[in-house]
Image 1 (cartoon, chains in turn brown, orange):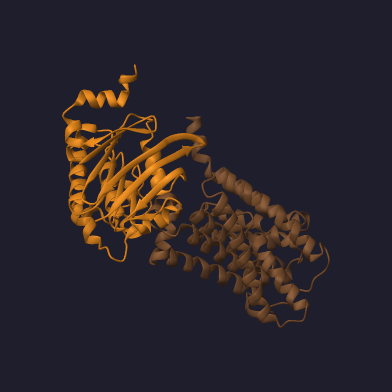
Image 2 (cartoon, rainbow over the protein chains, first blue to last red):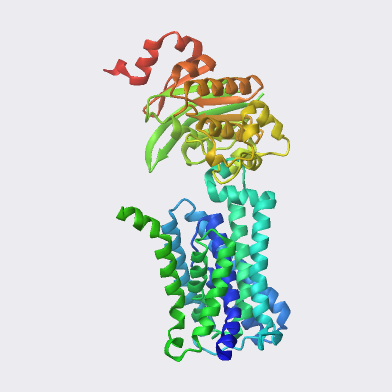
Length: 289
Length: 233
């Protein structure tokens, strides 16, 4: 029982990251209508910029800042491609484009970072924050969940209380109608891509030491992130947050059960399947009537 | 006094020419009515004017400034507003939020409510829940708050009850009397000609008539002939 609790608490760090990546995915989908498969890869690019700088001997915190800037820049670059050439495309076309971009980013990233070549990722927040039911809760766990909650709260406030947020909501509803009213559509879209790039980069910097710091592994964190976003049906920030944390905790607990621990990476797929079946139940019942 | 001049404008859709070498003028204080049968190219022309579709040739000038290469947002900031057909409200935003999206620094919300007092009671209601007439009032009022010099209005009467259409037409006339230049695309030809000043008729992407609204309103047979092109038969 203790082992299960310990693993569940250990899963909070991953859960916080899934939650933040998921909330960023919802933010991008709601505001620029893109199911973004490159979210984690953008953060990974920034994280590897940090690794490269620290390996070259630069101090940690300026390197963190530089890494976040790289993540923001890559996010804006992807956003530029999407807004310049695919703004009027269907949601499925946009999603397909981000899958293609993900493949491209992983290929370039693996090439630049030496593939499976081992890297030393500095642990930004080592140590324990507090004990919960006799189990150590790491600072990284608290921070990733805190960051996810902060992003969720800020997103809500930003969208509902500011003029730029109002413009973003209008943009997400009818981009052309918003542009015809003088809303700076391209600039705002790039702001969304830049902001999510910065947040995902920081989240991945926190979680990277606990994962294999390999470009592909980190980039594919987009799978649990999109599973979390699906829990919120790509609309609710709070449900996505809860979904992400729950996913991390379940994954952590699964690691203690020998018979299923090697399949725990499949848990997001099960969640996706369950949510899709649940969300389609009304249509199925309607068809059956 | 604002002057909106379109010279030899051509607009393509999917690389097919839909509007060919159209020239027309809209001036402050006047309503220019653009008539024509379905498929004549009226909506495509308006979309080319506001920048939704890039123009294939010709010039668009607003107060002497060429704007035909600018993006829609920049054309809006230059003073061109486009009320699209289909009542393009932001469905998830309230009436008041819809108005705020277009609100320029020089404009006040009161202007919108003064033009359409019906919207005051509906200010906190999601725009997607408004009636068709209220939605049309909202998109016109929203465009007005961008402080335009020229207002392009596309098929505002489509699907609305005659009493609402009359209400909207009167509001458009009022906006022109207050100094706006208006280019009105309308299916209800008789009603549009009754409030308009200058009439243009389009057929197969070209302007085939340019004259006064009153004169055209007095000769329905001529209007019918212009719509259908029976002189060619």
